[in-house]
Image (cartoon, rainbow, N blue to C red; front, side):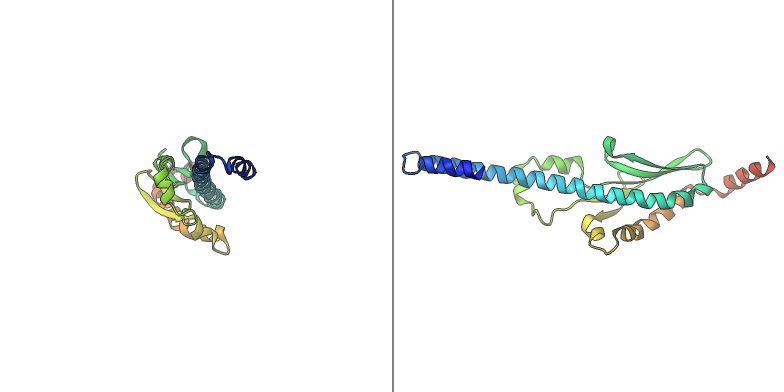
Length: 191
């Protein structure tokens, strides 16, 4: 593309159109740079959140068998394509399901703002980063984690594990029902 623009500039050089062509080329370059910046930031947010969601899935694989003996059902649910979140869902013996969810902390509004040229111009491409937030209910995030917090550590998996361990304890506490578990154990023992 640079070569073609350079060729156009050469053709216009020395003509009465030189100034117009140079202005148009300069405007075109700025538009393309803005477009590239917009795309780069958009992809960066998505990719970085996705890396964190993948880590969370690995951590859930570790905790799933630990919770399983104490509840009716545990499963990892991947809803990235539907609503951009993954979750560890736990169903207690009273058939109540609670999920510790992890989702991109950039909202659809944030991605929508990338369409605004003035907004994109103000963004510092280096400092803009993606991340995830954890919640039981979407409107009430309980922990937010940026990509750099985790991936600058020597062991990103262990680092994210430290962050979410208290959240898994909270999930366990919300679904642990000793009375129902004892009833189930008694029925199993009578069989």
